[in-house]
Amino acid sequence: MKNIERNFLPGQYDKTNSLKINHNYLGEQFSDYDEILRKISIVVKNQDFTLGRQVDNFEDKFKDLINCKHAIGVGSGTDAIFLSLKSLNIKEGDEVITTPFTFYATIGAIVTAGAKPVFVDVDDDFNIDTNLIESSITEKTRAIVPVHWAGKPCNMNKMLDISNKYNLQIIEDACHAYLATYKGNYAGTFGKSGCFSLHPLKNLNVWGDGGIIVTNDDKFAEHLRLIRNHGLKNRNLCETFAYNSRLDTIQAVVAMHLLDKINHITDKRIFNANYLDMELGNLNEVKIPNRDKNNVKSVHHIYPLQFEKRDKLMNYLISFGIDAKIHYPVPMHLQPAAKDLGYNEGDFPKTELLSKKTLSLPIHEFITEDDMNFMIGKIKDFYTIK
Ligand SMILES: *Cc1c(COP(=O)(O)O)cnc(C)c1O
Image (cartoon, rainbow, N blue to C red; front, side, top):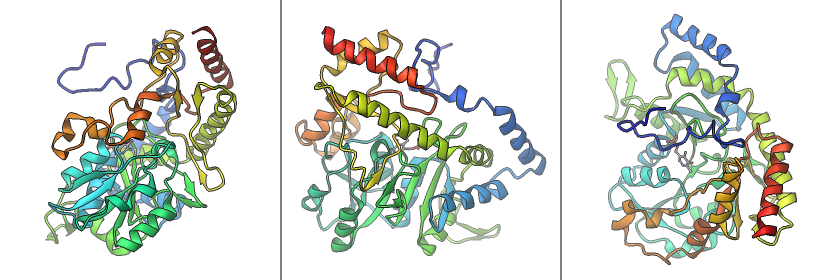
């Protein structure tokens, strides 16, 4: 394929043919695309091209799925976080506490909303260490954005205690955490709002960009519905000048189609993770993160473990056609974009350690037991030979 230079694509979809066991499974997942195209043709016939019935239907079904009062479809997961922060009236000079072990979008949303991100180190499970949050709170702190990394919910009891004690709002980045639960409640439903992404590489995914905000707060929901759509109450009445970040109607059709499969997708990922945990947990060179299964249900959007000799292992696995990937080698506080925030190497020891040791194995619903046995075998070989 020709290199795409102008429209930057960070190599997400291009390994499919060269590796046997891939992170990318989009071809299999959308093998019934004829059926989706048929559903899309109804939108074309009805000319319901922005918002409309398809978005309504998807929002209704999604809010019911995770037991929440409102779901609002928006342009992306990033916008879900950004619009939530804007609805809190976050402004210049405010501080928002979050994790340096996340995808760029979490921080991008905080910064573009006008706030200063304040990082708090993570624990061994990749999630923000709730014991470290209080010492980072200042008079300027307005909100916390916890990220339920890899699909494991953060310690929400502790998080809610802190938010009550200091009067801080919580906006959950639940982009990895469809159907994950903490003490029986769904990730995304604890904070003022929960934010999901429908990006092709997420557990619930569409053919482009999309996002969802969920909230139990009627007023908050109403405001979010306004500001995703120019602040319009109706065609002739603008209540507040705002944004254009609607969930695309065609993507809502794709998302609706996938909703019928999300339970299966989730169960299969959990099955795969349990299988790999059991087999790899015996190796001295491999560290499985604390799963805390009594309190949480993790949905394994990615499957990162800590490995000795991580970089060598990665190349070894790739040489056997296994798409081992690093999520992510450079933490947020050490990115060039963070230079004005004043952080240095050594500020977040756990985060920095994890960024050097973790490797993610393919875990999606099309990974078979044979695939897993092959990966397990190669990892065992690596530590026996090397
Ligand atoms: C994917 C992702 C986002 C952003 O989602 P987009 O829909 O791509 O904008 C935000 N946070 C995390 C942790 C993510 O993985």
